[in-house]
Length: 311
Image (cartoon, rainbow, N blue to C red; front, side, top):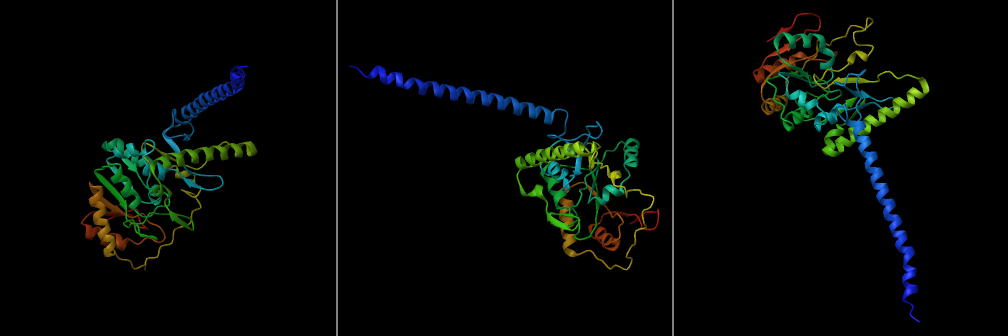
């Protein structure tokens, strides 16, 4: 008696099982591909970067500083890893402002756009929330070949000088290394997407509880770098107190700062003008000394006058 036919029959279930698994895997792969494709189309179509928020339907603005539980910043990843259109817009600028968020509070957006129209010059605000040192900006400028004819630099020395090698982020009492500088570009894309999805989830939870669907956080313009700082109730508030200034503060431009500044200006190219936005701890003396050492112009608005001090 030949046992081989029985052996062959015994293999048929295994063949069917393997065929079923292959079909399941194929269906799963196709379904996953369709789901990922749909997610990518939703996340990218009509948006600056994956999952970005427009401001009341204006896609030129994206949500930059937000978080209903923990505050986070988006533009650091966008600029440092060249995600979205912000870097491309900065490349088109004739004049670029550099500095911390003081710069955004000091600039009158309406007047800047009027200046643009009158003089046919594009002005870009490349200041960053919580970043006092200029090394972060220098890396972005040199890495992505941003070549502005004129740079206006806020030469502030609060905590650390703009012309330093610091890559610190300071929000409130906390100081940490700037997250975007600690990973590669692919991780940057992932961080941007995850942050937007997290904000959307927070918005959904908030809306389900309170029916509050209003725009949350500070938004930033892709084309100009302008930030919607007017959402801060203290900005231009009628009951704002006068800022006290320590006029006896003795400060000087450190030789190391001057050395870093010279190399900084060489690295970014173009021409530069220094300025200094007044605040309770600002010290113009060091900024004037720095400008003199560098041989460049400085424009400093006095704390108690509408006139501009110029050297």
